[in-house]
Length: 544
Image 1 (cartoon, rainbow, N blue to C red):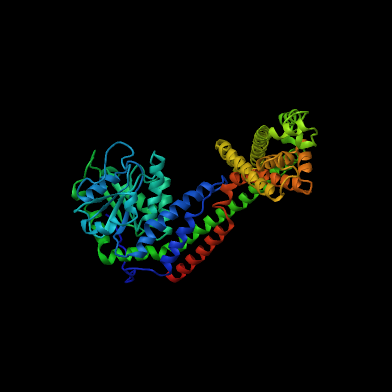
Image 2 (cartoon, rainbow, N blue to C red):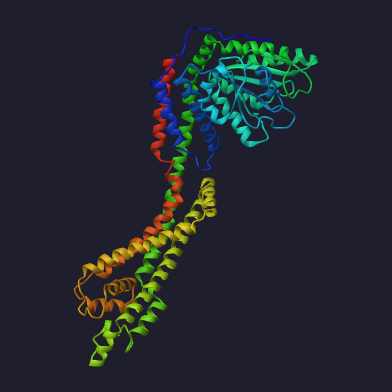
C-alpha cells in the first residue's frame, strides 16, 4: 500500500449550524428547484445535468453536514463496470450487503452501509431515501460506505445516479483495475473531486503479480501528474472469481485506512476540509448555471415574441369575420327570413302587424317565437365554436411554423407542442368564451328596459335578439331597433364584447404554447441565482 494520510489541521466544524452557510445552501437549493432548462440550446443538456448534480450536492451533502457535523463521513465507492466495488464493500463490511457477481450492472440500487452505532443518524439522512440502508457490525464506525452504480453503466439511469452520488461524498474511493484505470471518465470525475477539495483514495483491484509493479508505477505517476500525489493507493491482489467477500487480509490496509477516517478527529478534519473547499467550485457551478439560464431566458423572449406575431394576423382576420356577420351566414339568415315572412313567428318583431286576427295570432305565437329564437341562437353558438375554434387552431399552426423556422430550440418546442393534445383545452376555452358572452348579454338585456311591445318578447327572447343582432343578423338588428328604440350603440357594445371573448381564445392559445417559456424562465430567476453566487463568494473568502 502507498498512502499519505490526511494531515490534521486542528480545525473542526461546529456540531450544529444555523448560520449564513446553511441559509445560503437552503436558498440556493430552493432557487434551483424553481428553474429548468427546457429549450434545446447549446449546452442545455450540460446545464440540466449540472443542476441535478448541484441539487444532490446541496441536499445530500452540504445541508445535512451543516445541520449536524456528528454525521459519519460519507465514503462513496465509485469506478467503472467490473472493477469489483461491491465485492470490496462486502469485504469491508464483513458480510454480503451489496450484490456482487458477473451480471452487469451488479449495483442496480445504491447501498449505504453503516455501523449499528451510526444507523439512527443515517436513517434520517437524505441519502437514505436514495439508497438502501444496510447495517453491518463489521463496518468501521464513523463512516458510511456508499456502493454507487458504475460510472459507465450500460443503464442510463444507473450511470446518471453514479455521477450524481459523487456530489454526496466527503471521501471518494476510486476503484479500478489494471485494464480500466486509463479510462477517461473516472479521471474527469477525479478532476472534479480534486477541484472541490474532497479526500480521495484509490484502489487498484484484481492486480496480478506480473502486472503489479508496472501498473502501480504508471498509476502513481498519473495520480501525481493529476494533482493526487497524496492520495493513498491500495493494491488488492487478484483472488480469482469471487461473488461474496475477499479474504480479510487482502483488504486489511484499506480497512485500516477507513477506520482511521472514521475516528472522530480525522473524520471531522475531512469534513471540515471538504466544507472549506466546496464554496468556490460551487460558485463556479452556479455561475455556469446562471449563464445557461440567461441564454434560455433570452431565447424564450425571442420565441414568445415569435408566437405573438403570426397570431396578430389571425386575430385581425377573425375580427373581420365576426364584424362582417360571418356567424349568421347561411342557415341563420335563411331560417330568420323564413320565420319572418308573412304569418311567420318572427314577423311581428320586424314590423307592426295589423288586423285583429293577425295581432291575436302574434300573441299566441309567443312560445313558438321563443323556440325559434332559441334555435337560431344555438346555430350562432355552433358557428362561433367552428369559426373561433378554427382560428385558434390556425393561430397554433402559425406560431409553430414561426418557431420551426427560427432555430433548433424553436423546432423542438414546436414538435413538443404538435405532439400535445391541444384540442381539448382549445375546446374548453371556446366554450368558456361563449358562456362569458352569454353572461354579458344577460346583463346588457337587463339594462335596456322593457320592450315597446312587451307582449311579444320574453327576457330570454331579448337576449337571443341581442346576440343575433350583434352577430350580424339584419333582421334581428331591425327587431332590436323597433322594440328598443332608445338603445343606440348597444348592439355595437355587445359585438365588441363578442370580439373580446374571441380574442381571449387566441390569447389563451399563445399562453398555452408559451407556458414553458414563462414559467421557469423568468428573468428574475437569473438575478436570484446571481445573488446566491455572490453569497457563495463571500463564504469562499471566509473559508480561506
